[in-house]
Image (cartoon, rainbow, N blue to C red; front, side, top):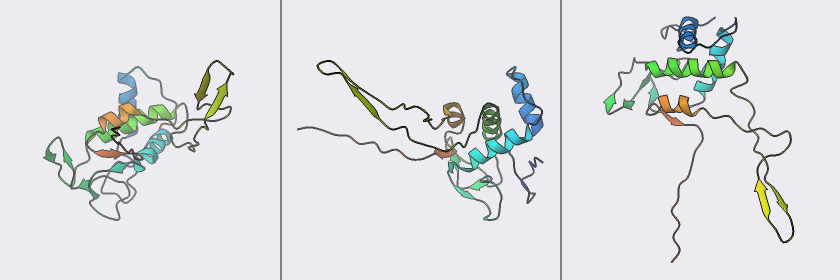
Amino acid sequence: MIITNPQSPDFNSYASTVDLAKFASSRNLELPENTESLLIKAMDYLNGLNWYGNRTAVTQPLPWPRKGVVFDGVRLPANTIPAQLATAQCMLAVEAIDGELLASSREASVKSERVEGAVTVTYAVTDGECFTASYPLVMGILNGLVAGRGFAINAIVRRD
């Protein structure tokens, strides 16, 4: 059962089944009968993101509401759940129709092929391997609310 009331100890979703139906309808998308499981899968994905700020209560079941979040230069009230979260959850729920959002991540090993005297080709696709899906549109609408998933290191290298 989807519970969208942040005051409930069973709060488990930012978006309701009605929100998801409106989202899909406005984009002419068809949804299966059981949309609650799609919203739960989407929520599982959102729970794994690295959000800015801190939970308002240690005991709250979901990452939001949060305190200490500045969005577009404005400090969000600690009891706010931004509308972008429900939209992102609906986007992810639609993605979950065709597959798992939290599939195991396996890095594809690098293969090299070389033809003597010609070309060497290196690629990272092997039979049976899969790549971790990314959702740039979801991360785009959450920009400023979430720090991302994983990490990256940028460096400048100069040769003298």
